[in-house]
Image (cartoon, rainbow, N blue to C red):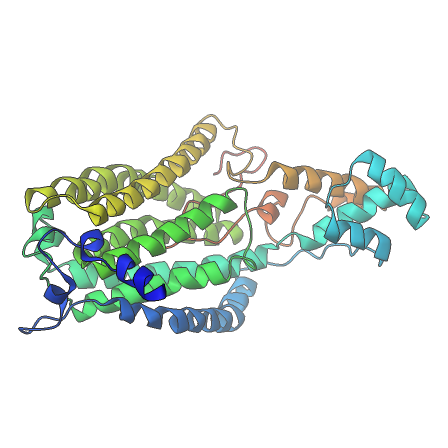
Length: 405
């Protein structure tokens, strides 16, 4: 049964154009082709990325945050209470009023004390600005190096300037060493993002991020196996271009360099809209949709690859809408947060401030301030994904009387 499924999965007619077989993609005549077995190395490389990330965040990003004056807010810790803790972890972080009344009786605390306990407990789980700075630093370094590496690998290639050259001699296109490492490192990085998604800062578009990372890995894996490597490298480069600006804008935001952050955000928005909504659909998808059928009949792999590109395009449109909403609010001076932020977290922050302000006057005066950054920053940020194909994240928080992004 397993052999039957294996043979069916690797059936030539699914992956390759008509009259071509896997035998045509065996190394010969000085040509070297990508093989599915090469992708196994991305798993240990992904764990290697996690180790490098840990060392980078510990030894470089954390001291860098301190030197930039970024401090972590110390939240008031909720008192130990097994009854309330069990409810918080097993059932709900935000109990209804009826549940609060019941928990008040079980724990022998007043309703007000139970409410305050849940606010403090939620506050404990909220990611801090230092953690977000470390994550953004790591992604910025990778995207910057990946973009530079992509330019170095492609600037002298014909298909970088002429899209029709992507399909010249396809599929008998020998794999270059630069293409091998560009692919393997990008895929390993996105694999590491999937492995760390449970520990990274979560945002309202968490599901879209997961879809994005999975679509990226499937797209790259498929293009690798069927030797769509030329177009695959172009797709990665186009996505890396805006991610560098995004992560750098977040870094300056956390450091409270607002003018620099705003400038980088504007540049990011322009590059994102141009690369993701113009170059990606009208150059790259056009290249994969129109030119191949001029050389061979359409086959399953042709449709599958283009569908995955369209999935990414839909995610681009979704994130572009959020960016445009932020720009509109920025222009009219009404921006109060990231369109991707979680409203529930904003409500929790307000409730926490109200609760803690009732403890002491001094606490109340400083409650809306973080160690470095506003309360809005404490709620923002992701993962991220992504990457080569990662989505837009938190940008800049405006002051009360200025229009920052």
